[in-house]
Image 1 (cartoon, rainbow, N blue to C red):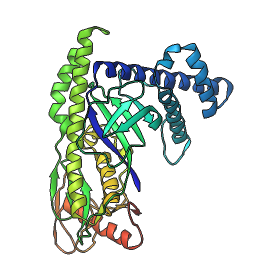
Image 2 (image 1 turned 60 degrees about the horizontal axis):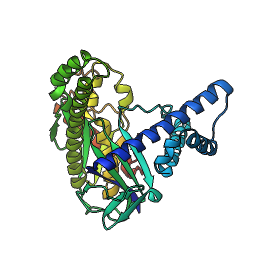
Image 3 (image 1 turned 90 degrees about the vertical axis):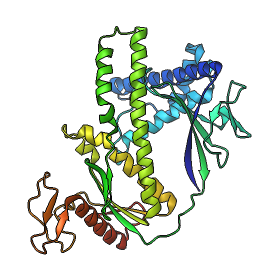
Image 4 (image 1 turned 90 degrees about the horizontal axis):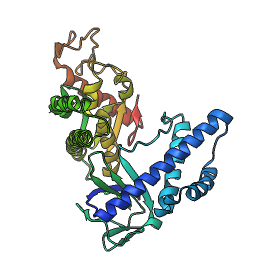
Length: 374
């Protein structure tokens, strides 16, 4: 058994929207107030505030600010648990997480509810302190009752519910096919079979419109209704770009996982590559990190093997036919002939073939699942 989140959109009534806005605000206040208290305690006194101390302090906060009692206490307690998890991640050297940040009012808002704060009955979910079920537009039925739910509102004003459920993944039929995948910018990815998936460049498609709207926004008076309307319009456009990118990646990764038993990719240092100012926007627009993330969980659920090869493998410079390594290969040179065997080589397809070879060798040596073959 594993856990999976089922995300759906819902359209709250006016009463539900008001309660959600109040809940978002209370959760944000508790998060920011507690984070400021913890930060100040450490900086001024060298004191580390424990989770139990933060929970005791919540009682004092509710007495000082009575409006905190108007929302479910589960929401506020869960906010503190989420902050504890954020600090645990920060202090874990393996995760390299950043210090928890303050939450903004105009950013994405969310609250997490355990079973004590919602009711699931006959396929309907009802929040605590309300009687009317949330009007959810289900795209599929839930397999079991959710153990927790997350309610969120994005910057474009859309409401979503994410239901965490236990489910048993079903492995796909075994296939002898394997594939090497080379990520790029001209083409989003190239396979060892010679297939090239064009890079949709979702952000670039709307870049001119976004720049125009940003210029208009800079001329609006801060705090005015016209500025807020324009800001929401820009947010909706950014959401559209992100949705298009995510949808395209889901379709591409689903096809790759369905068709291949072993998938080999490079373990790229995407964070380091984003420091290159000339390429950072293009890399972010391509969504390499999301592409790998989707491949990882889909392969695990489908009983496939995802093998990551070392990023230091000179996959473009090695001839996939004889293994000869060319000394210099400028980025502008997309085709070349092997000096040893004379094989005509497409740079990207050659890289994908070498990634496949290295990945299968690592897999044979024991790199299973989402392992790494260095």
